[in-house]
Structures are given as C-alpha cells and as structure tokens.
Image (tube, rainbow over all chains, first blue to last red; front, side, top):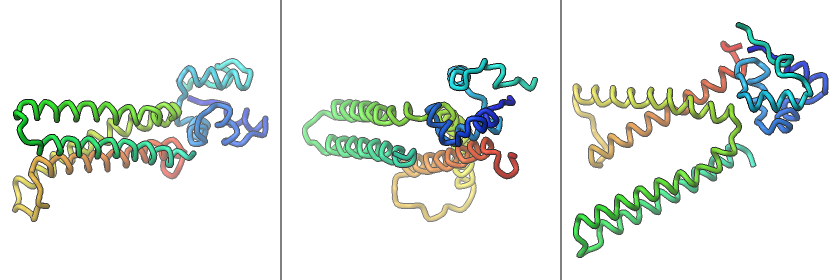
Length: 64
Length: 142
C-alpha cells in the first residue's frame, strides 16, 4: 500500500522520531510505514489520519 | 528505557521465576516421606504456576510493544519456530543414522529439549531480523 506519510511529515518538518513519538510507536515502525513495507492496523491508520487532520484515503492509497 | 533494556529486564524476571520454580521442584523431589503421587502432583502444580508467572512477567513488555514490533514477534515465532523445530528433527534423524558423537553428559530427553529450544531460538532470531530488514527498505528489499 502506498502512502504520503513521508511528504506529510516533511511538510511539518518532523523527524521520524518526532512522528513516532506523536503516534506512540517506534522510529523503526515509522520507517517501515513510510517505505510502504508495513501496512498499519485500522486503529493506527485512524490515529495517523487524526494527527494530520486528513481523511485516511488521502494518506493511504490501495495499489490494487 | 530502550526496547532492548526493557526486554532484558523482562527476560531476567522470567528467568528468575523459572530458576525459583526449578529450585522448588528439586526441593520437592528430595523431600522424604511424601508419597510419590503427591510429590509428582506438587511438582506439576509448581511447574504450571511458574509457567503462568513467567507469562505474567512477560505481559507488560508485550503490551509495551507497538503493533509492528508485535507483528515481527508473531511472524518470528511462527516461521522461526517452525524452521527451528524441523531443523532439530533433522538433527535427530542425522544423529540416529550416523556414528554417535560425544554427547554432553546429560539425559537424552534433556539434550533433546535443549537442542529443540536452541534451534527454535536461533530460528526466531533469524526470522525476527529478516522481518525488520524487509521492512526497512534495506539492501535487496529496497
């Protein structure tokens, strides 16, 4: 699954560690999310959407 | 506290609980004038309770992991565990069909348990590492 996490994070000038702290996950998890190698659970996806104030579908795009 | 420190502390607690339980089982074994059935029942009870205590000691660490770390552990337990146990089985078969090597001086069943555990732990560590490497975008997984 593709996502815009890296762009959204960069727009806010946050480091991976900053985002990880805000999401209460590890920096490695943020990295795995950004590279698109790990798809978050629904609760985490909603948390990310709330943090950026955007609908989920504008952050995550299904590649199917 | 770093993840590794927290893990080391948790595993330390679990190990302490296991050592305490093993000591208690040994004490029960050497207690005289107790019918063997009661002795065995008491030993099994201690083993079951201590296994529960170990899980209880591990619970806070598990809950402290984020979802990706939990996923990595689940994947490593499944794939590493499967790999390890089949590898141990293969080792057993090789040992049965070849010239016996110089075994450590311990009961055969205990040696089997240790070999199976070590193989599974090694498998777990390998697959845990692979899970994170695949998701880090590192090397061949870019």
